[in-house]
Image 1 (tube, rainbow, N blue to C red):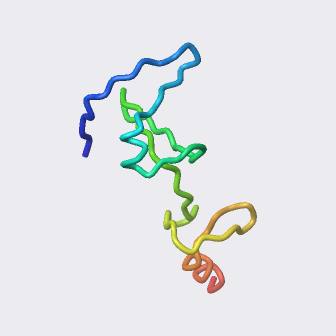
Image 2 (cartoon, rainbow, N blue to C red):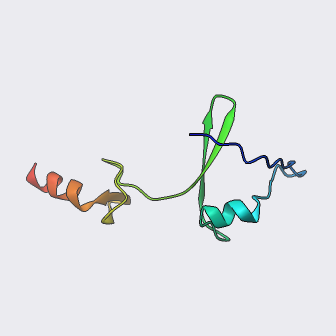
Length: 81
């Protein structure tokens, strides 16, 4: 659900904005945290990046397999094939 914060920021000459400290604290964002950018119609959505399994989307028990992240459950399913 979208909720207005009432905060308005202008883009600088390089197209950057500063996220207010209150939002960074609320979302537990720190300097250099990766952020995903999504577009939904005319809206831009920012989300703290969380790695996910490429097969099921889970973010638990991940490991690298052939340069891709997969979870333990999917790995177990693959070994049964």
